[in-house]
Amino acid sequence: MNEKLLEYFNEIEMNHWWWEGRRQILRQTIKKEKNLKILDIGCGTGETLSFLKTYLPKPSLYGIDSSPTAIKYAMKRGHKNIISVDAKKLPFENNKFDYILLLDVLEHIKDDTSILIEARRVLKKNGKIIITTPALQFIWSEHDTAQGHFRRYVRRRIRKITSNSKLSVKEISYFNFFLSPAIIGVRLLSKLKPFKKYGEYNSKLNFSVAKKPFLNELLKSIFVFEVKLIKYINYPFGISIFTLLEKEN
Image (cartoon, rainbow, N blue to C red; front, side):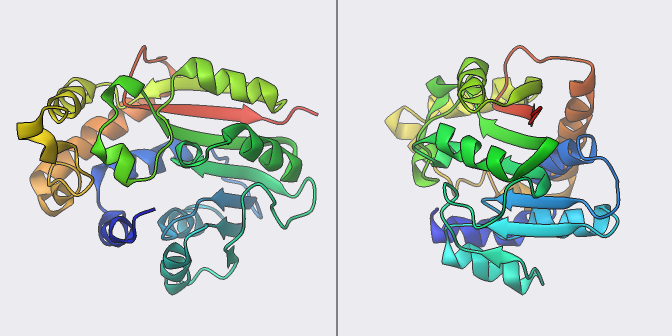
């Protein structure tokens, strides 16, 4: 991932509306049990691990990332079990983890099935994998290119790679539905040369929102409310997809 982008993330993740929505997914998906072993694949700056450290009672947290810059940020946050390894060759024994996180990671991997197969190996029986991915290929923009994405997803592809990995889908839904008309409009507009800057990863529309308290809190409220409804509503489309997988045997 672009190092400048990691710098942006490190500055805003704790407050930006998008990350708060992702944290809400974890709140309603991970059981608050003691001594859970959790692996964050593509842990980035370690912000998610910091959240889990305060949210869960005595968790054992591990993170991996291919970026030395990301590893540096995560270790500065006080995380110790952070290593730089290939996610297709995890240095952990079989059946180790209760939960594995792949939060906006699969789209960075050319062979996404191989990651799920390896994640399944180190997951305990009845363990869970929590996935978020960007959705809708037709809104591909410079934002995706700069972040090193190979693709955006639809539910059908998620189900296919899950089946190939011998994992069971427990929940799957699009999300970022309420705000999707505006986001889709901006991404499509950015395909036109005069508006190209709106699709760039460092567009003020993407990250500077975190520095505008009223707007950021408004978007956060909308997004978190929407995520809470995933328990009752399967959204027909959205900018992202949430998937909960289980290793049944």
